[in-house]
Image 1 (tube, helix red, strand yellow):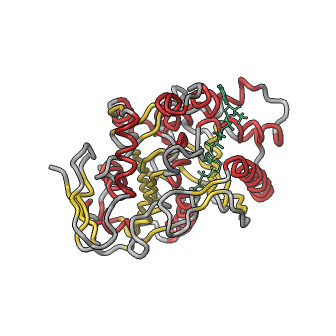
Image 2: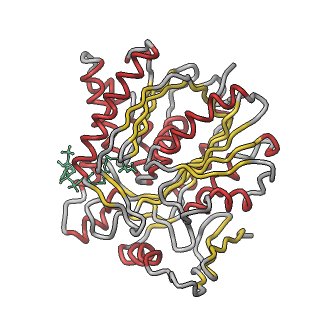
Length: 391
Ligand code: HMG
């Protein structure tokens, strides 16, 4: 029996900052970002957008041709959740009219949690082949204005319906996993912005990739040559090149650079203009590959690597199904990205600072109205978050 993705959709915010604006502000050469880290733009959420609204917008697209009564679980993977107790997925469940007889919960382990949810969903579905699972990964990457991580911020959500009638991709069950306690990136409960040891985090990413790959190949018996494309967690687009050149050296020394670049470049197209989407990042990269690749990927094996700082990494794999293109929302994704509104630095800084200045004493606040798709975060009343459907 096959198990995998029946439907998948990406959603990002309607505003972006060109990284040239950050370079101008810092008096730097913008090629440090465009070429050095491979990033041109980053999505910026307005004050009335959060992971709930991003996720709900992704869910309505992914659920378009799905009978909601078959969904029995919604897993919400995020590290920028909106409540320490209540799962963000419960607001998404209400906003998108999902059935009442289902379970909803939140998953956390930095950027890894979506892949962790997937690993648990696959065997569950094989045991319950009449059911479907909705995995939503949504994040807003915040490092702080003028911080070293600022150019690697971003925002977005991926919603995936997983089932035993996949139409886009099947997953194989063997994977390689590696966990170690490291402080490369973290966010204490009292902070709204991540702390990071940037260069160290890149080293930890690469070490984890090697360990996960070693276990994957030992358990599955597959080799580098068995893969057509590779999809990496992309905190910035250049990280995919760093990771893949590292893996090539380790596993397939003879491959020319022009050849290995072809294995990863389509997966980085969305990342380059959206920025880091944390838990959604590896799936945003998969979405990018499926949407923009002119090559027919039917029957091709894809290797995926998810890394979540702290840290956990997993290398896993799947194969693209014939006819997958007819089940994608590619033009809608591309249209949303192209039609985003550019921000000047001051408006971006205003949007950014709004969240840090929200009241914490229970007083009411109404968020100003911006473009947020079909849902918006309308404000706070007595510590309660208020969401609205936009007509
Ligand atoms: P930085 O200090 O701003 O940049 O840090 P840099 O000085 O290292 O320069 C970056 C690159 O640009 C270098 O290339 C420079 O040579 C080049 P590299 O040596 O890396 O090949 N460069 C230029 N190129 C062309 N023209 C120029 C120019 N100037 C310099 N004029 C860093 C960069 C990514 C570390 C920083 O932005 C950061 O800390 N970001 C956040 C952390 C991060 O993204 N880590 C990635 C691995 S950890 C991970 O993926 C997990 C994560 O997603 C969180 C989670 O799991 O939840 C982050």
